[in-house]
Length: 396
Image 1 (cartoon, rainbow, N blue to C red):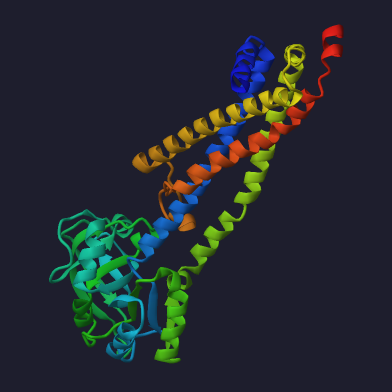
Image 2: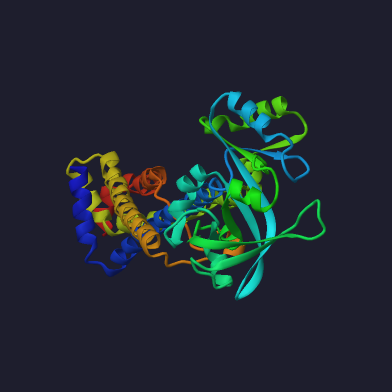
């Protein structure tokens, strides 16, 4: 019965322009608040997923590196020790070297990255945007930003100049571009040149078993910190053990910094929406005071009369939450499919605003809005309970 009376009150208030306007404002405030919170959480989660996915293509959960740079002194021994530790899914080698590359259209600084063929086929080949081949013979993959800057296409030739610690003159060799890759992180897309590790070692005139780092993929992502400490103790002080968070501490800190204001924003948006809803419900109490007095006179208890406005508050909140959720999902789908919002990769690490579709915010935010609406409805409920039928009907 309470729900039916609340619905009749809502229908009768539609005839009053000011009451209708106040209701629309209340529902809109809830919708905008829900949409803003869901979109902001989805963007932050999208950042985390995009950066983690991209960075793990060129590093791993745990990375073993020389403490003072250069090449690992005994990579085979380090790899065997890593394989023998707990929660290790795979161990791989990585060879990297800074260099210059020259094409017919210019010269630029790059990072040469040598990977195993298995890692290339698993992680790099899916990133190909131009070209059809992976890394075979003397072919390499280059980032899309580098290809654009040097006007390089698959089939073109690159001349590579790499420093040699034992010689004054650099190593110079040619390689053919087999494919252009796009991983989504600007720092990689504008600088990376991917080789087969053994082929890169041959061109650099170093041992084919050489490695700049060893990549350890963990089966227990939650226990990476403990695994880092165990490997550091086992391998000694000559190497540096870094986790994914250590390698990309700047990005992780930036994401955490963006996440901290969300509770404040949630509080402010909820406060504004709550005050707006209280005002709307108080207007409804004033407009319907005679009807409330008649209902109480006919036997409706003051408590049940007050619950009419709590029910109305929850109904408005449900409507606003569903509208906000629908708008948020629509905006996220549009950005996901058409990538309308682009970013400066030098500042934001990625060139396109990343989004995700986390389930928890899409459930928790509307539920929190509905619960808050129920609490907000207590204020007009108390006002409605204090209506004195005799005074209202006598002096109306």
